[in-house]
Length: 311
Ligand code: UDP
Ligand code: MG
Image (cartoon, rainbow, N blue to C red; front, side, top):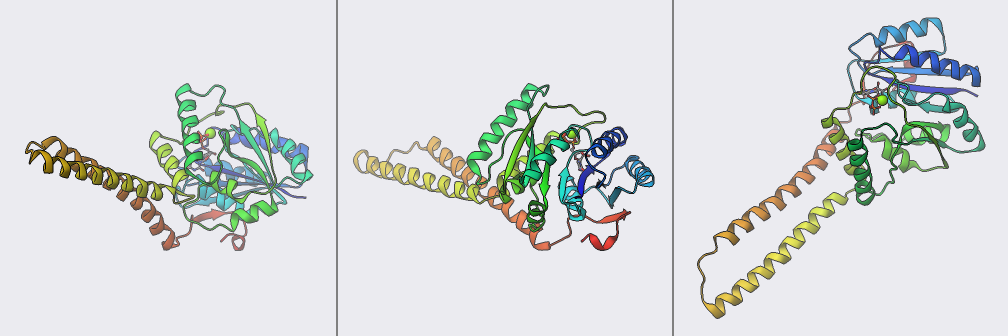
């Protein structure tokens, strides 16, 4: 019974050695049949050299190195495509996902759970971040068809069945949190205490978080388009009512010339409604544009894995 552990790494030279030590110790206690697949996502520091040195000392270490930074989603996909284990774990390179949980995950996986998911609490996180996260999850819950839960990320163990299901989805814009939830299967959630990064710094900027947030809403349904339709309909109803009342007042009181405020209001309001709607449609068209190009999710520069296995 083989366990694969997929670890996406982007500029992680400060922490990767520590992660590798802890992870390999932990895995050695559980089984001798494991592989660790490090995916170097175009790091600009010494991450790749570290990975190569691990691979020299142990044949359980595999690495895939991208030609540039393709993002964590692509890195996870590459790792999952190569993983040959009966059970596959996905975890971050910064020890925020404690390797100690893998033993417990395996126990549940063997009981027949296809996804054993680690859920963190938000202890030690910045209050503002927690506040926005809660708000965001509430919004996404309302706007989308898939269920996202606060504190649940990519750290999980997948059975072969669940992994194959994930790999069968070939979309270009991958929003893993949604994909994991979309495939379903038997799930078990285990809780753990939040941990801060062991070293190095986070790759998320405010802008990338916003982009990720928009992805989460748009990747899974067309409800925002329906929102445009409702907004447009409401605007039409209001304007028809307003025109009627205007017509009546003209008929009974004669023409009342001063209409500057209402005219400007109408122009601004409907201009805004149209721009929002075009913007939302544009987001979808942008996504369609990337989907139809059918470009690969990533390009591999070097690897110690037999290339035939990687698409
Ligand atoms: N990561 C990656 N490619 C990227 C950004 C991040 O492979 O473009 C990896 C990173 O090396 C880490 C994981 O994704 O293993 C999570 O990143 P990070 O710790 O910066 O995110 P946070 O924990 O702050 O959400
Ligand atoms: Mg992190």
